[in-house]
Length: 464
Image (cartoon, rainbow, N blue to C red; front, top):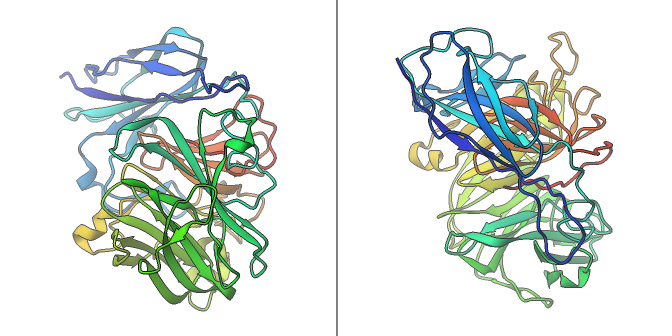
């Protein structure tokens, strides 16, 4: 019986650039058949691949198709793979193949990752994911030093890349936004936001557009998790999450961007409460609602929440992230497990959430509007032993969640491409750049851009 495969091929841009006014990367592109027929008879399936642009380190993935409703809260073991909920899942992941440009072939024998035969009678989706593993990226290829991609002289948060115009069409030149705070908690001297259009001359920092937020020590941005995020339908309007002094109070605010001058805060809009917090993630949106999160790392009342807010500044609903803050384990494993996500990014309706160490995940916030049940919005959460962001699998370990120990890399921000493959920056693993996850959270592995030497990989934003 012949079966249908549907392809979602990925184009991953790995820059191979000179430092010039025009930002023109070399595009890596995989071209493959949209559908493939396979007899599921144990024979070898040869899948043709045309590689153009650059060399490609390439993986093949085979996923279930149309089975998400039957895959509910699947946990493959406390010291096993990861937790997945209402998503089609990966049944096979190949080892990587290194290809030059031109005609290539990837093979599959109809078996799953455990060597079992994949069932007949079902359709499957296949993906190919690749990156340029030969061409070293050049410093400052997209924006000046200090804006998100590399460390710089400013105290910066996790930036936001806007890829679509206000009408939903792809921008010819996306823009990058970031929030800047000079001074530590309780000693803030300057706060402003900046915007950079990708494609401008990265050597000309005068092209950076800023707006002054004038946030005082009473209210200031409270950590690396907060972004300054645009309204997807009106780029003159932006949102920021602010935290009160001594971690008391939460405020979500709306500003009108005033180029290179004082931003106009809307005093009638927003949400303010006396809630405690440690980190607040600013409202993000690509649809009808704004989504933001907060976390708290005090073991006396562990708290991590996701919120849905409308564009009038009213809270629509919220939920406690119980799968992130397992209270009974706090005393054993510490704040990394307890405090919830520290960074949020958004892609096509999904929120990608990251902690400093082990836990990464993806949520579908609209599920909660439909059911009002937790953990419905949680789509996947990686767990102990996936060998990507948590390499500790010893069941007798004193700290199996690797809370800052040698077994866990330091992570900063989970970013997704258009097909929900996601990467998180990694530090403390030697010459690696990112940890890579498939669309259901399957840990693919740690990968390194060409020329990676290790060290601090903070804020290498990924988008495609």
